[in-house]
Image 1: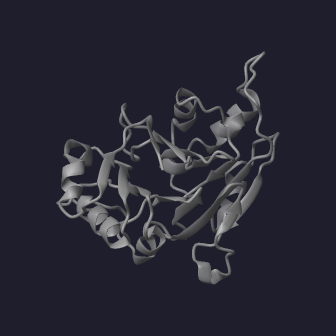
Image 2: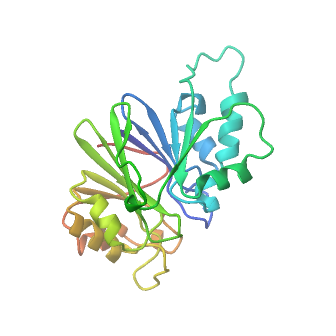
Image 3: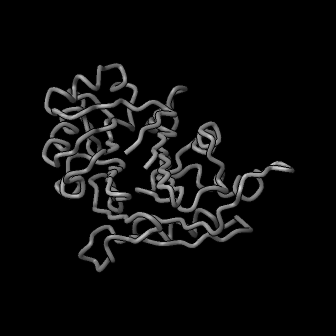
Amino acid sequence: MRVTVVGSGTASLRLRRRHSCVVVETGAEVLVFDLGFRAVRGLRRAGVHPVEVDRVFLTHFHGDHTADLIPFLLHRRFGRRSGDKTPVRGSLTVTGPEPFPGFWRSSVRSLNGEAPEVLALPSAAEKGAEVPLKLPGASLSWAPAKHRPESIAYRLESGGRTLVITGDTEYAESVVALSRGAHAALVDCSFPDERPVPGHLTPHGVARLASEAGVERVVLTHIGPQAERLDLAREVARGYSGEVLVAEDGLRFEV
């Protein structure tokens, strides 16, 4: 899997960090996780056109994860220049946690044109969800995250490799279980240890989660202004023995 961190920031906008957005190329499909503010511009800078995307997955409904959903759909429909040879991948599926259909209807009420397939994922498997969701060349599982009531984290498996995207969360046993044995995890690291905020992780929380789950490599993202002043890799390494990367917009890595 090829991963591109399009946006590594929080709702506190910084010039160097867009809102949350991650692209995963499995070889069979192009998947996008979250579409925060300026994500479409970041996708284009990363060489990804919205018409190339097969599926969009949302972790929750905060604006710094969803603000560019409408611009994404508009750019997918109208953003190709005359003579643009970018291949259109076909139908688009947009997926989010319950109650996603209600969120979708309120978001796209005035949008005409392409109507993507909409899929809602229950926040917990005991609600009867079919876990994992089978995708071409991959499978996707999810579990509740500890941020908003609808928040979920994702686990993507493809080609014998595993990637976890926590979305916004504080320490949660459900996210630890989802992350068990993952080769890589993109993990919320919004605030310093001395200034924790409910619903988010600090370096100590990242280290605890990753160590308990046995994750091989963590990539810190959703980095707030206070946290980015720190040597975050060093802070996490105090309690975690695996590899630590600190995401910047445009970071690419293989899983």
